[in-house]
Length: 141
Image 1 (cartoon, rainbow, N blue to C red):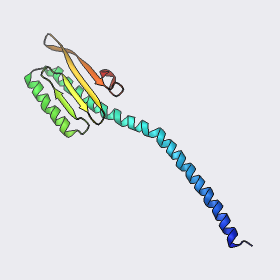
Image 2: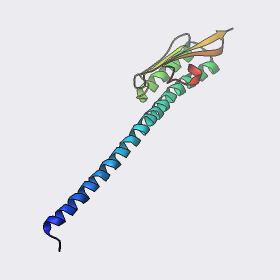
Image 3: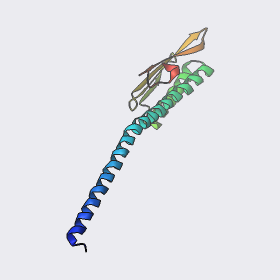
Image 4: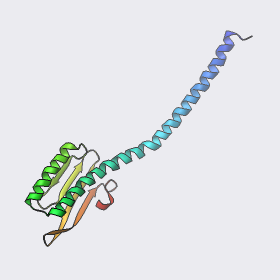
């Protein structure tokens, strides 16, 4: 015959065992979080930086196709202002009269400076400098 005292001893053992299982599961979840969180953050940063690269590429393609003059630069400046207003990732985007672009994101800490190389009044290529090098696309390092 079991007494109330024996019953409480058995439940204490079960509670201790259950608590240890709970701590073990919690510890395993914490380790998984430590492994996965940096990968996820890197993934989202790369996605945001590719959005910056897309803004630069579309502007660069337009200027290459239509040439650099007062009309095209003015039009692209207006579009750059719209991009900054609509997009919370891009903090600053400006196009100079020579066609060079400056793009900055406070959120990702990324900076792009893209400059056309002109020969015989035609753009022959674009030179891109991006900082920090680990965050920018390979074409802009």
